Picture 1: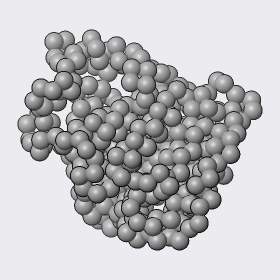
Picture 2 (picture 1 turned 120 degrees about the horizontal axis):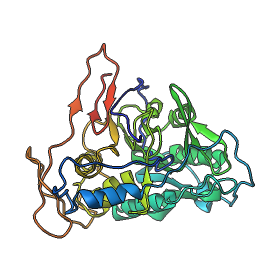
Picture 3 (picture 1 turned 45 degrees about the horizontal axis):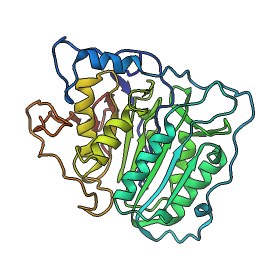
Length: 355
């Protein structure tokens, strides 16, 4: 199935700040279940509708060790060659969406859609287009992904917010090693990501991995950084033809952020997404590691022109997309491990780990 409910996470280093999202990379067929045939979920859909959505999950096998067929290729955007000073303010972002891989047997369907939604969130937050590098399909070779990470480090200054988003295949290389798969079939490992981000000066970074094994990229975490993942380190993630995007994108990015249902911060949008997924698709739960000192809000408060939802309450209720009063669901549990503990990650859980 898609999501393990508990998996061990590794400790991480304590320098820099980052944002990343890996989306919809490896999926398998499966069905969301409801405990009551007559139950209506958070968006007015009952068990039959949820079962139909689950049947639309696109089974995508993990990528092969070696791709066959020619690799797609395209020149990188001109923004990647812009002068650097490592003193930029505001939001600086790298957004990657890869559907097209070498050959034709292992392409994805909706990674580019996920990347497009993230672009829309950043635009709503007031980010100038010149402060974002977009890599799609053949532009996103492994070497260019590394170059884009270096571009982010070279431009995002201490007062900036850094965002790195990756939607595409992710490969599991070992018990504690995961890798993004570039459009050329070559790899960028979690260790590569952490190493290239080691000099990142930005005070705030959002690391979101919406793809298979995304919870395993904890090497890139440090104070001020948040890692949001579509699945734990040993679990698959899903995209679906019902929404034409990944589940994490649909609930966290599209509904939680673009539609304003999740409130102003990354953390509040995650809380909204997990509450809604817990009701509609309980086997598609994301995880989040929060090493930020407070709410991470993209852009200037109020820059997204959508009304925020009512303040969360402790009662579990239904949120309607049709304009009816929303029901609030209880936020996910926040665990506070002791100094002697390793972080234990439960799907749908917000985890804070000790220094």
